[in-house]
Structure formats: C-alpha cells, structure tokens
Image (cartoon, rainbow, N blue to C red; front, side, top):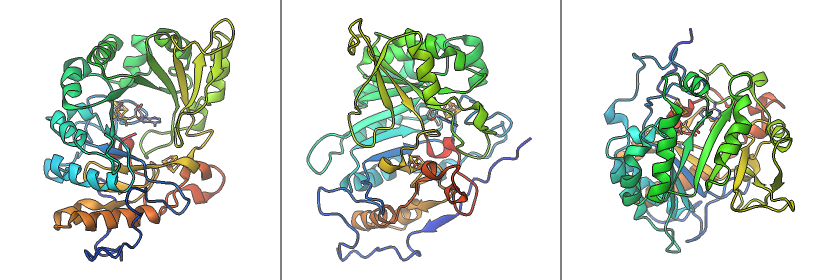
Length: 384
Ligand code: SAM
Ligand code: SF4
Ligand code: SF4
C-alpha cells in the first residue's frame, strides 16, 4: 500500500527569494497596463485555476485512490485554506496581469461551504479593458442538481462536469464510492436548465477500464448542446500508479469513433485551447452545428505546452506554474504578512516572468522533463 503523500511541499517564500516587493512602483517585470505578463517562452498569463478544497466525495482511482486518500488522510485544516477574501484579492492581481478566465476546481469545489459567496466576489472582477471574467467551475456533478440555480444566480457562467462512462458498473468502479450515473446526468440537466451552458463533459479514458464506453458517450451527448471531451489519462501526482499502457491515445479514440460516426475537424477558437475539436458531420460532410462537437485533450501524446497559459493556485495559496511542478510559490505567506496589491502583483509577475515549465513536451524524451527536486503535487491539491 502506498503511503500518504506529504502535505507540505517545498516552498519558495517570495519575501526571501529576491523577488521584487518594493511598493515604489519600479515597474520591474510588470507588463504595461492592459497587457499580459509573459513567461520566458513568451506565453502570456491568461488562465487561472483555483483549487478551493483538497477534499472530495469521490475516490476516482486515477486521482484520489482510496488506499491513499483513506479516512485518516491528513487533509488541510480550515485555517490553512485561503479565505474567500484572500482568493478574491489574489484573483484581482492575476486579472490585472492578464488573466481573463478563472476556473474553480479542487478536490470537489462544490464541497466548499458557501462557494456561491466566492463566486459572487469573483464575478464582480473586470478585466483591465472592462470586460467580465470568463468564470467557470469543474465538478464531479454530485451536488450540481442541488446547486445549479444558486451557482448561476451568484454569477457563474458555465460548468464542466466529469463523467467517465454511462454504464453504472463502469462508472461506479471508477468513482469508487458507487455514485450512480443517473445522478450526474440530473446535475447536467439542472445546469442546462439554469443556463450554465455551454456545458462540457470531461471523460478520462483508461484502457481496459472504460475505453469501450467512448462511442456510447459520443452518441449520448450528440445533439444535446453538451460538448464531450476525451482526456488522456495523465501521470499527474504520485499516487495513481500510472502506466503508459493504460493511456488510450486520442488518435486511437478518434479512429474508433470515425469508424462508427462521421466527424470533421474544427479550427481551434483561441490560442492556448487545450482540446482538439471535431464536429459531428451532416450527410454532405459539413459540420452539423445542431449535432454539436467533441474534443480531445491529448496531454500525454500531443503536448500543448507551447501555448500553455495556465497558472494554478492551490487550496492553501501556493502558486504552481505547471500541473507537474514539484514546487509551489507561497503567496499565502506574502498575503498574510500584509503585502499590498502592488506588491502581490509584482511577486506574481516575477514568478510568471521566470517560468520555463513544459513538462509534457519533455516527457519521455529526457530526464529534463521531470520536476526538479521533490515529488509531484497531486491533482486534487491543485485541481485539473
Ligand atoms: N472534482 C472535480 C471533477 O472531478 O470534475 C474537479 C477536480 S478534478 C481534479 C478535475 C479534472 O481532472 C476532472 O475532469 C478529472 O477527471 C481530471 N483528472 C483527475 N486526475 C486525472 C488524471 N490522472 N489524468 C487525467 N485527468 C485527470
Ligand atoms: Fe474527486 Fe474530481 Fe479527483 Fe474524482 S477527479 S477524485 S471527483 S477531485
Ligand atoms: Fe502546461 Fe505543464 Fe501541462 Fe505543459 S505540462 S501544458 S506547461 S501544465
């Protein structure tokens, strides 16, 4: 049995790391107003994922396997979590530095008490050009039927729901808490009814576990206005016992689907988009927009690091520059030591300006791909 991973990761305290912190407005590493800060590879900061809890009511084997995340697992105490006010204060600085999209995640974000209050606060933030944020959330759907309407009222724009199959035996084995498919689908319906669309469904595909479900899933969501995305099973974290032979490459799924349904490639709608999109085709071979589209997130076989514009803020306020990073940057200490907004912006800007992460692009080629130093951070800690 694997032992529980350490909860404390090596941290860089920006106060002692030589990062700029003067309130003098020296402008060091700060982008001109209205422009996004860029990393060493020219990638702008556009997308922020905020993990609001490290807890979850599912035990998906690829994310929080029961043997590790058992009842005595040392989850973070409440005092370690960023408060809603702290999250909002940080989010405002990220937006000033270029972030246009915020995704709430976890753990299971709907388990965080009064999450609607945080959503209200985030929804009030505008980009420097006065536009509202693209505010979304990824959920396992278990609490969505109950919460969809209040999430929408609070200002959430859309949701992504994770669902790994339509067959109860398959899905219940994967979530490992016997949660039924029908209840997730009720959540999806409630989200549609509440106006939380366009909705995306994430399906992690594992060979020999749920790969026989891909065509049924594609048929089920065709014409519903819901976009299904197939996600390659990733070697994230250190607890899921990942093996390459359990990854089903996107190309293989696409070939299997094209053998049974007509699909046409769609152009990506924006830089940094993670999914390759395909549309259901009409008899003339053109995209039938009423039938909708599916997507492929090929993090293992076709790395998209070149366009990766995502930062991740952990539940306890560590800034991670890559899903595979071994080390975070401690924004909570800075925040709680009384840093003002300008100092926070300077620190975030300096950390992003120094970013060179591209784990997936290097994966398998050399050992350079592995995160330096310590073990990898878990997906449930920084969110997907
Ligand atoms: N609990 C929520 C959920 O499941 O939607 C949000 C957090 S979860 C970590 C975010 C996304 O990461 C989910 O869509 C999940 O399927 C995906 N994920 C988790 N572990 C993964 C892995 N090893 N490989 C690929 N995707 C993974
Ligand atoms: Fe929970 Fe989401 Fe991880 Fe599944 S993928 S264990 S639902 S956090
Ligand atoms: Fe971004 Fe890291 Fe994933 Fe590459 S491996 S796409 S840098 S999160």
